[in-house]
Image (cartoon, rainbow over all chains, first blue to last red; front, top):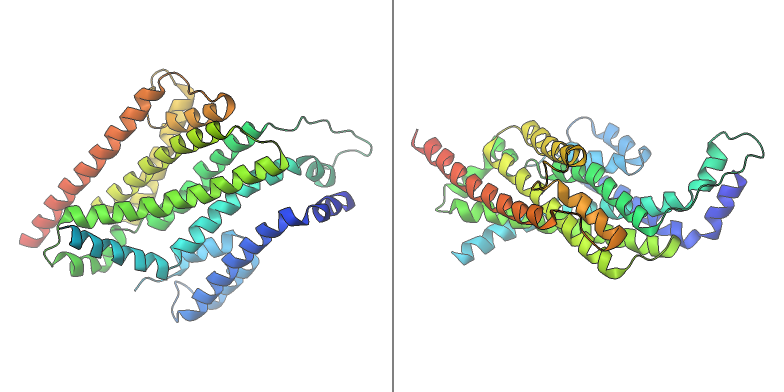
Length: 69
Length: 263
């Protein structure tokens, strides 16, 4: 484990963009989720999905959670 | 005529800005593109930490070449990338139909040609820009972590792959215009993509003409800068098929809608 964390720390500049993009995806999905009163399915579940499922959670929300009207 | 097209296109554009398609699709593609070089680079570390190797075992995996990593990236795009694109756009016409909102547009004297081509150009613009930024991310990280691949190979391979995406997204629009169910659109287009790539993998001789060959041609371009046999046939065929599908879609949509109105 130590070696991996060490390897990651050495290349922080390489990993950081990935984390930032993940964060952007999450924040935008959350904003959109809160902005709409109605989602497909309970809103609080979508919030959990967006926050706790990395990358895939926000995608799932954008594809299935939004209600278009 | 041109003005009407512009209005319709702008409507699509504002809609996809409002539902964040212009943001999340490119971000997802960048993440997908960057993952492949990253995991290849850290592969040995990851195996050592999580692979449950016995103590003291020495792992000697030759690092992959840059071309291999880029080919792997296209593999990711073909699986997860296509899935995401198809899910994002399956409702392009079908969704509007089931809500009846397309009638608001189509009761006005709007030509079906304009209605469908505006959607088509819009879908392609988002899909291809997502691919371009994602692929650029992959190329950059590959150059940074693994090795540089000759620019010509990268550009020509990417361009060939872009045509394959264009083909699939044309199919998505076609199915979306002709069927009401988004499930049919998703399964139809993803199924066709899968079938075409599997067939061209196992029977490349029979499938020389198939657009499914394009992705393997683009991978060949990364490795050698040269395409395999029959590249021009599949290239020409893909362009013919794209034009054919679009013409057929507009014709069928026209017929269906006109029949629907007079009933």
